Length: 476
Image (cartoon, rainbow, N blue to C red; front, top):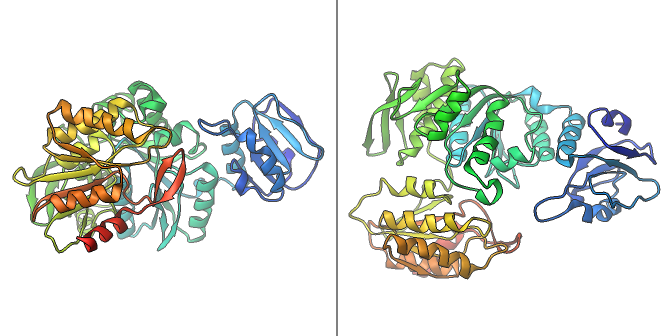
């Protein structure tokens, strides 16, 4: 495609055209650049794409989109100066990819907690009900038995468009996608028109980025503003606030009057039983928070025309999501659980329904880009529920392990809790399991399905939580 045609899709400050080659692709990652690609130099939080223009040119870029004033022009290369590089990237990618999102019923899920499980329940139900659905999120992109890796909860727009075009080849018409606040602010979803926008909840997280809860809430509302229909949780204060904005939103709740309210909830041997508008549902999950996730799926399926009885039957087959309250089999009789939980709200959701007569351990740390308040909060909430905290390494990045772990410890001590600090994550896991007895609970929190630790900056070192647990079990 000719550059002049592409330029009609974006706003730009100036252009310096020195070649007329056909454009075949676009990326903001210089490593992905191929012959006759457009390289979009984005000034990010940790890296400045302008420093990688030379790499992009070496890899074959014929056009550079940039924002800085000091870019050096080279002969034979096109240079396009823009005000918003992320917006330019999204518009160019959508145009070159032929706007693939328009081929689907798009369902976006946002919120501090529950995005992955909610998205999985929605895609599971639609697939069971005869509406093939792809699922894009934290753990990858899944469709028709295929899996594509994803780098972020919400991938870059170029990756989203690539995935959607792959899904399109299989004739699938529904896509559910986790939409993080970062992704929304960074325009990774730009140009996608959603049929449904689901808002699960909001609690303090990513304050290093958003600074205030009001900013965080506004970021989440970007999804709902770009959705034809909204689904909101009335048991969350910010869900109530969202309902005030979107008067016709579909509502879910356990405690408040809503269109889809879970009632007569009781624990049964294989999970939870509850009623929605007179119809019984059974969920093979153990946390009350899972009912909220299920209600989102029930709401969308019912709104699409499926009756509650057939939705209930379909939900029976849902067995959960990897690393979301996932039990690890062992011969010790210990309840070893792996969960991706990494916020105070998700910690509390895991802890609050546990039996009080069992000893409980939690192995966790927190990313180096989280605020001191959040770090202490994890310690406080663990101590509140009588959890023995085994504080360990979890992506210190640009901070130090000592600083992070001591702040978590401060939170534990504020609530008179017990803890130990063990830097090596495998040794921390071994400590927790070896001190637990039959029937006790040992939680491994924060890593989930991730296969890395970021011990220094954003450099990834291979690490797999479940493999490590299996190694420990073999050694004990």
